[in-house]
Structures are given as structure tokens and as C-alpha cells.
Length: 304
Length: 115
Image (cartoon, rainbow over all chains, first blue to last red; front, top):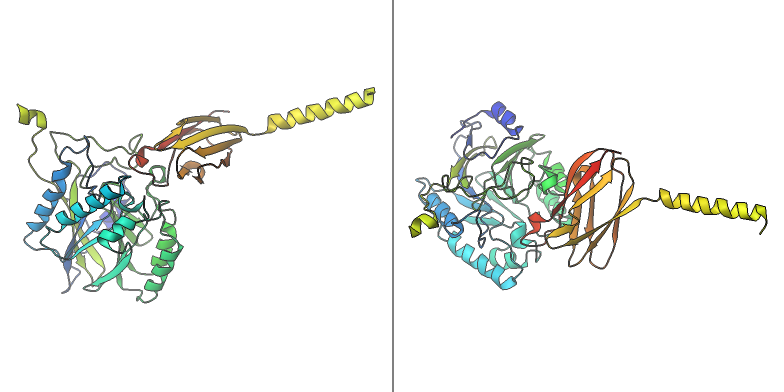
């Protein structure tokens, strides 16, 4: 399924709770960018090291996504992984092993500019020590063809906050920007109260959004909730990406935020990555969700 | 002790008893990876209760968004939270301090029954 919509339709969609949307795209101001358009790919919540019934092909899903990205006729300018690269473990050695394995797999991308940021599964148990050893800083900025990207860390503090020090860093960075500069925030958890009952929020996310509010073109790309979701706070747009390990229910649609079960008849259901076309001249984006498409044979059938 | 003294003692006793009965009920909740015990807590609408939170292993969080209650639960300490629910219903609470593989399952339910 592919949905194309203008901005008014987008705002209507953003207000819908709905079920898990398995494949869609949002078309916004597609004719906006004159010359400096580019695209990047967002992958999220890969949870490398996870094993369990919600994904019997846990070791195969991320490589399939990377293969699909590598097959794009137009390679993205960069790829970003928005957190929970690895599945958490109490064992610090195993945590580092998983990160090295993940890094090796990500190294198979044809695109050599790959950005990372942590999720709580990567950084929540050791305040980001292992993550930083393997991937570097947990918050940073970079500029690409007119868009100022800000990577925010809302997971290294186990209480899932941005924290005063990083908020000051954000304020200092924003002080150097023009109010009409296109700004894209990359982070793991929602910065707004998406569904606090399931911990789908960042306790001091409102403080970060207040700092971003004066800027006219701000878009947040995040993960954490294992499904596509679109929302606006004021004029700031928030887009979560699907996971590459298992989908979770739509906010509040189930008694618990438990993984949706794997379905042999619809393998890889709800697992997707995202292609983002950027139009910096207007600070707008076109998002397209790319479901994992692959043949899956259940183990029992293999044995037979 | 004369009649006056006895009467005074009785009033004092009754006042103390009254004060005791007006004290909020204490509900003890224990946290450990990756569960709360009990995981289902019943209170009555309008009933003042004190939630006594303790952790058996590490720092956890107690977050009850419907009543804007959140506290860290630190081992070897008793964390007390007062609560007087003003609405009936079933309200989830969860640990909001990431505590490992199973953290997402560390949840419970506050059920507010009619008064």
C-alpha cells in the first residue's frame, strides 16, 4: 500500500491513532526543492542479538534490509540508524561483541557515510560506555546540503532524559542557527508524550522542543516504538520509523506493549526501513516506508 | 484517678484512635527485575493511600502517568508516595529506569474501585 498525501492530509493522518501501518509513504511538497535535494535512509531498532519467537529470522532481517538499501538505483547520501542497534545484555563483553558484529554488518552498506545513535538497549545499562567505544559520541551535529542535523541522546541516562548538560549544548548550537534554517533532529525516543503509559516519551523532551520551537523548519526522525507514526507538536513534525526486529502494537491498542507475533503467512510483517527525500530549500521531506520483502520458510516446513 | 481524669483519658484514647483511622492506608509494592509485587493494586476512589516502594536489586522507577506520579526506587530505601485517586478505572504503571532485557515487561496496574 502506498499513500501519497499533501500537507493538509498529512496533518489529518497525524492525528489518527489507528493500527500499525505496515507500508505507506507521505508526500509533502514534493516539488519544493530546486537543486539541492538529496535522500537518506533511516533504519531503526535492529536489536542485533535478539532471539525469540517474534522474529525467527532475527539474524537475517538486518542483512536483508542492507541488501535492499544496497540495491537502490540511486544510493542515499547517508544512512542513519536511530537507536537500539543491539539488544541489551547484562554481560558487558557480550554487549561489545554484539556491537562489533553490528558494525561489521552495517559496514556492508555501499554507502560509506553511516550515522549512528544509541537506544536504551545500547546505552541504558552502562551510560553509553560500550556504545561510545564502538560508535563514538552519543550526541553531535552535522550539516548536509543545507540541512542542520542534530543527533540527540535521550537514552544514556537510564531515566531516559536529555539532561541539563545536553539541553545547554542544544541551546548553544541553536543560537548559531538562523530561524529559517532547516533542522532535522535524529533521536531514539519520542520527544513528545506519545503514550507515557508505555513509556513512549522523554521526560524532559518538552524542554528540547521548546528550544526548537522558534525555528520554522524542524522535523524529528526517531524510533523506539517499532512502528511508523506521524505527529505534530506546534509546527514541529515527528516521524517514527518501523523496526527491523519486531513490530509493537499501536499506542494503547493492546493491554501491553508486547511484540506482535510473527506470522508465517505474512513474514516480516511490520518490519521496514525508510527512504527520506529532503528538500532543504523548503525544509520539507518525502518519506517512503520500505517493507522487508523476502521469502520465508518456517523451520517445520524445512524439516518436512 | 477521678471521674474527670478517666473521662480525659477516654477522650485522649478516642482521639488517638480516630487519628489512627484517618491515617492513609499503606500499600507496599516491591520492585525487582522485571516485576512489581503485587502487580495489581486496588484502591478506592477518594481513598488516601501511601505507596511504600522498595527495590530488592537495583534502581528502578515507578511511573503512574494517569496520576502524574513518578519516583526512583533505590535499594535499601523505602520510597513513599501519597496518592488520593479522584477517578475510577484501570491505570497502568511501569518501571521507567531502564533495567535490562525484560525492562519493558516491568509493569503493573492500579485499579481504582468505586468508593
